[in-house]
Image (cartoon, rainbow, N blue to C red; front, side, top):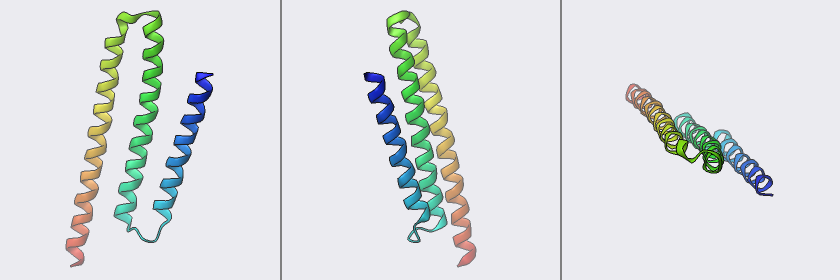
Length: 107
């Protein structure tokens, strides 16, 4: 029962993210820089939510079978999320710098 609900919730979340992504990337109101940033944000949150979902399923199973391994698994989870976040911010900063350079050259 619980896995059926979590699968439906996960599918709903993914559908909402895809719709938001399509609305933003197809809208003429946003320039390419904004579209790229929003696309990156959607990809980031999709990755983090999927990763979090999988790690928490793993941790909940480990709590029942071998609770001694949970701290190591949780540490791996936080390290992975930290690496993804650092990479995301690095990409966003690079995009911002590129866009700033384009604006400066167009002035």
